[in-house]
Image (cartoon, rainbow, N blue to C red):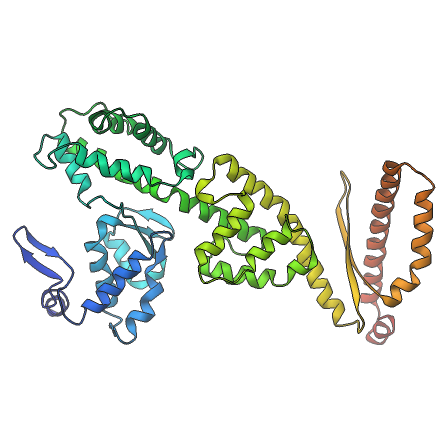
Length: 439
């Protein structure tokens, strides 16, 4: 049938499916036309260590020269490279982690590869077969020869984790915290391997048990190590989503898209404030030009948390979130000021200042109004402003002055807004000629 011809041409002749001493396996081709495309996909996997990326990110590159992979072949090639690297690549469907492909998932993958993303999970210094070696050790196998051969790379992995991952409680599951504690409290490699890790994962001390239970322990340990590996990047992603929301952007966008939209949204806003330690400081970091996206975002997190995000504690993260919440309110004001200034620029030919007047009374509505003051308005308002200042100076009590001013502003804005609404209703009732006269 056609499938046999496809298999021969795509998998057998290319060497992707080959016979070894242990039977038939999928493997990287040693040569041939598909090798460059295969290596390009592996490079793509390597680029996903910090953040998951959809398969479709490089589809256009694979279809174009110099690779020239046919559209019908692309899903097969993707799947083969994934299966060969499955031990160190996590798979996600619509941002949800899944253990691997099923038949139903493959059908969806062929139609919508953009729904599927991958993230490489590699533990430096540890061979991909570490979990099988763990099984061999607890079952009395000959390889590895000592427990230290497992304990060393595991300990190195834990030691290389960011300080945030070493300390956080809010960002990890109970099991992950237990495994982390097992490493920190273990007095010997044997105690760690045979007692500490199993106990942290809900097993009794392992001396002799079934292969099925040992396999389950190994798989759960693998999941926990993946969680620990990704804890810092997940925290960064959560913070990025919160910052995007504060800027009025879609929280689900990727880092590159977030940078472009954030800079577009915040362009020039730093000119509206001198608050270098507050919103201006954040705006300057958002608008900073750089070729390193990760460093660009890390600078934003450093500003919010007052230290590199890898060194954050849960308290630092809470403080960063609180600071962002405070600044997001000012963002709203600056966005409004910028929008109103552009509107006034269309109607005023002279230089002018823009003011945002706000009032929020307990139990009342939030009221704000933007006003543009050019030279003419400033000149005509001098007498009124002087009278108001003189009235306030009649009392030397600053608190009393502030109370009077607060009530005056609130009453004025309420009356002003009411009259503006009334004028708009009257305006809408007039015919077009009358509207022109009123305008």
